[in-house]
Image (cartoon, rainbow, N blue to C red; front, top):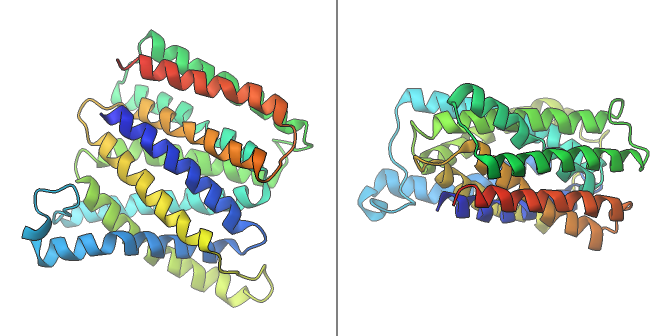
Length: 299
């Protein structure tokens, strides 16, 4: 069941990337990110309020938000900080780079998580899972070569570095989730995590963006901004519950979630008409084959 939840999460994570790209084109980054945190919080706030004041209404359902202690609040606040670091760098990267390039770069996260999961949690992969991981790593390398053909220097390009930092922070968050979700219920994590993000992102907006808003790219409202939060909330909901299963493996869940690159790639190819697609498509097919082997490895 946890693997099916991971695939479900991957689908909506791809739609989330598409919504981000549409929302950020010619738009100011920080207000879009702040609104994302606000809308995500509004989605889960009713569940938190009902669970707090009318606990019998949702008790026993997957939407119930149990009370947590101050230690758990502190752990969730740390997660919020890590994720916002990833998002801030990632949003700037996806705004300024082709979507068919950003997705594959983000696909490096499971490789980082795999190393961390083996070192920290002692996870071990079987033959099929190793084949899937190796294919995914190979596809990432080939796709980076395709990016060079578009004149993007992976060492000197600022936006590539931003996406790399976002991927590293995202991998750190993934490893942290494996620890956090064994202590705190998924709905509690997702509900409070979003509220803390509003506080952090609101402070950043007031200090960094608002005083200089007239000198920077103006903010434009688009309905795709709302869809960022909707798709992300669904993707994270499935992700958190996948990790809550005692037999789930963070290395596999994270790799499957990177299958979201297929959704964003198709959008970049057929809607945004991005370049150098033939080489990227051949390379990207390895990711799909890798996902199949990961699935076979859990049977």
